[in-house]
Length: 326
Ligand SMILES: C[S@@+](CC[C@H](N)C(=O)[O-])C[C@H]1O[C@@H](n2cnc3c(N)ncnc32)[C@H](O)[C@@H]1O
Image (tube, rainbow, N blue to C red; front, top):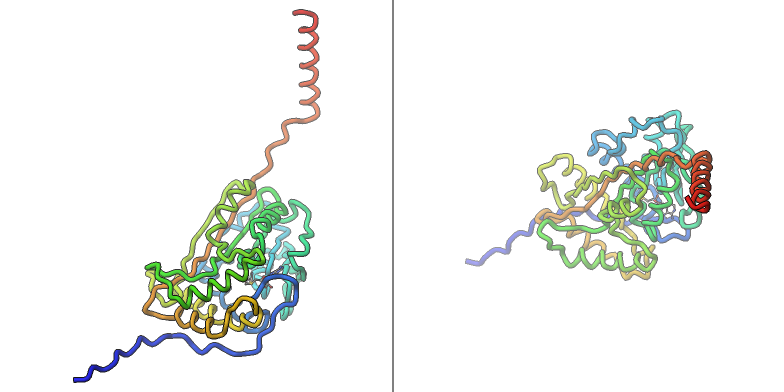
């Protein structure tokens, strides 16, 4: 009897959209598009994150901040969706949302200020200006990300909150076995970005960077390994987050070979990576890290002018007794 060939497990990979994509024109290594497809992707991810966090925009207890926040800064704001949510949460605060390109933000709340700025060309804020500073999925695209984290900490007031939320731009397998297609794609991507000083595996390093800054009284880190290849965890909320990231993966890098001609990435390389990432017979995940840190309050000022004068007087008296031989 002839043996029938085994039917292969059907992949859930959908055909990748081949729309003409557009990118920002700023002098920055950022490689993701800035078109409607990207905006839909970012808004979808924002909605999924909120659901995962229990209808919250962050894990930090922003509501408990005293005094109530007046000045909030968001860098790499994208569609502005986080800034707008926070502006509605704190109607008496001003939320400054910064990005290299704002394509289609219409009618933001009146307390949102949109600022178009390439952060590689300027960081125009005074120290201790903001109650909250937020960056999500930006550090992973920026050269020398610890330096940007430090600048953010400096513009935060003592007692203020720094929210760094990022990921490792990689896929990992529960059994450690990544396919060649996935490895090849990410090796090319990271090899190219490294030439501009971008570290694409930022998420896992955030905690270390926050500790090294030595500016915070407390640091909180939550790791979210989102299942990409299928809903293989016991946590329905995490599985849902993974489903959104699965959709997102096919859109985020689509067309990237046009923006990164020197990287060696091809459409075939990209499609093979997405195909393997959707393989339900594997257990693959993406690693996200939500961090929030409170800037340490200043030490009370003990060395006042009066203290200094008293110390001088004591010194003069003691030296005088010593000179006189007592
Ligand atoms: C992956 S998106 C994340 C958007 C948003 N934070 C979110 O979570 O939906 C990164 C954003 O950072 C912006 N960006 C990248 N490089 C930048 C730079 N040098 N200066 C300012 N914004 C930058 C991009 O334009 C993009 O909107």
